[in-house]
Length: 157
Image 1: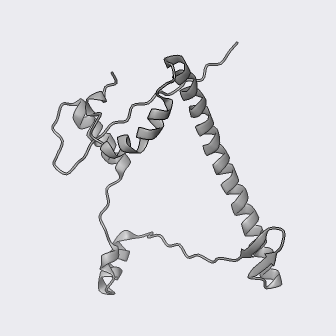
Image 2: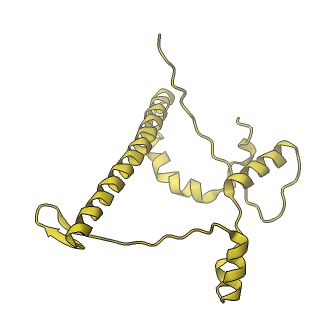
Image 3: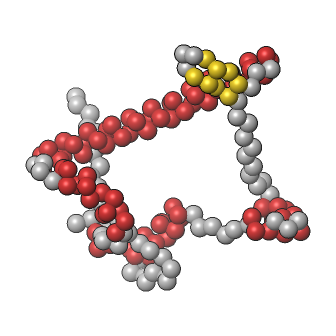
């Protein structure tokens, strides 16, 4: 058993979501499951790599096309071979000085934009430390564990 195994069962939504898939694989032998885990892990990592690469290609092509369309004053185009394309301008904002922004937002009636948040990665790290040290967890924290097999790629000589 893994060191967090005592937390298994504290996240019923995950069990429900995977129930049908687990049933699908239930007739496989242990050896077949081992092979599938290794194959799916490798495929998953490759898909993530490809997704990142495709995202970059899409962004680069899109930015270049926006530049060309801007020169030609085009905002949309219909092509029979690929369908309609249209320019979409989106606005994104981020706070660079939280103290100044909070003061401004409160003074201008949009203080409701300011929310306290908890970084889930930092919270998980702190909870692991509490559990490892044998300290009780505070109220208001739900803890669950997920066990999986992580293949380790071995290099062949």
